[in-house]
Image 1 (cartoon, rainbow, N blue to C red):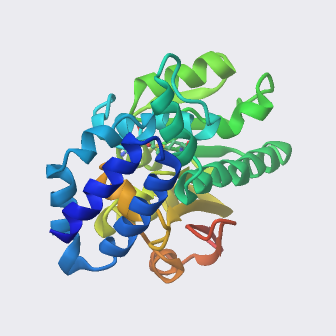
Image 2 (spheres, protein in one colour):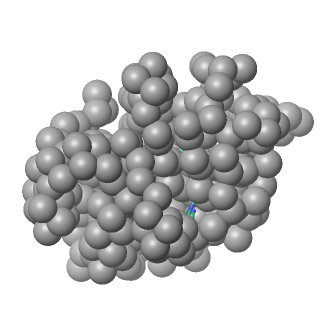
Length: 290
Ligand SMILES: C[S@@+](CC[C@H](N)C(=O)[O-])C[C@H]1O[C@@H](n2cnc3c(N)ncnc32)[C@H](O)[C@@H]1O
């Protein structure tokens, strides 16, 4: 009942044109509810029963995420909306207003910060002439600043042919693109004795359960040259739009802190260095020492 009154008022505010007030308030409420597992299922269910939810779906980020146009959550098209901070062409004024608020949330900012850090990683590796393996590359937007340069020492893997097509259009035929599940790719690469100086993956591990993480780590290590490094970034469990993402965007991630990521590194005998991004919502983990 309490939830419904809150949602009624939120809807009223939106109808009166106060999206910029209503959406952050709702996001705060969902954050608090998410923190209480006993309350969360009911809060989420009551939002999904309420007339507010279809109104929130005018937000292009929520609509893209919840409708999963490529059949899975967190596709590179959604990530592009976040990177470019431009709503899709032709959307309504209300949709633009929603987007103007939600694209500024902490988690989308973390995604943009993650890319900035990845741009540095790519530039350094390229300058050092390293062989680089990018797992779940999406649109490889961290390579955009170096468009036109030689990416011949890079191998990019993604399961999504559309994503690879975008990379091909951006970087031309020299870049080595593999359409595959990362696990299948790594198994085969290890069998063939292929190795890399740097293996990194962003926006993948947030979807992998513990067993899949262990397997990924073992397989990545088997494709790493001695002295090479593995880098990954995983969302941490404390960002403020966590309830909005789960309940409105239907975007569930597996959140991990530093100790958890360090644990996976230890299991494969590598040393981990971890740090947080500027928004305090993504944990980076660099593994070396193999
Ligand atoms: C959230 S996007 C991240 C894209 C990019 N790394 C970035 O940071 O912008 C996730 C990408 O992972 C890919 N992906 C998810 N699971 C995968 C798997 N098991 N094997 C290969 N690609 C996968 C998806 O196709 C999608 O392009």
